[in-house]
Image (cartoon, rainbow, N blue to C red; front, side, top):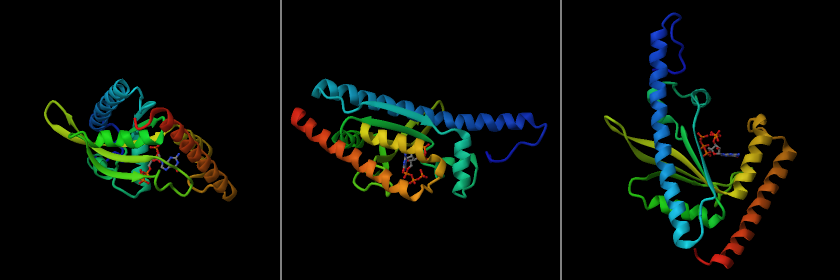
Length: 217
Ligand code: 0O2
């Protein structure tokens, strides 16, 4: 089914079928998010119980809107067939994990890696290697099994793990510059990367205070 195509005028049942199919496709991503959220909540609560330190501050999630899926497929020059969405897009399902300290970001990654039913498909470490504009975060593409009434689907989820400082910067950068569509005016770019460096320094200092208070945990 091409989600970019419009059903012929008067073909209301065809259009209904298309919407139903797309809705069912997107439902599977919601289930994958639900499973991952449960896993992360368990890790958060159990680690806190054992070590008196919660490595997760909060978690948000979203399933990409159909219009945003279409827009991204078109922008990348990819087919807008609903059956190919899973093949072409890694971020239809997204989970964002906000951690207090940088060490917690890697702790969460390590705990996810230890789960047998979580396959890590790809890792992008923008903390070790920040983007040119200063963006920092750890991105994981994971695949998890979702058990449906008649089959098992292995669904991809993009997990962004970052500190409060990284999230503060990324959220404000997005608010300030989204309208420039990657063409940020020249003076702004330097100012922006210097604020990112300040956020990174804040993370380092907080990490060192954390190590003094909590040691290795
Ligand atoms: P949204 O609304 O957050 O989903 P992709 O563009 O995903 O096909 P790419 O370039 O490999 O492939 O993705 P990458 O670099 O892993 O980053 C994708 C997501 O990371 C973005 O999703 C943002 O959420 C976040 N991100 C990446 N770079 C920046 C940045 O410079 N600033 C901010 N604020 N966020 C960033 P989307 O799809 O852009 O949007």
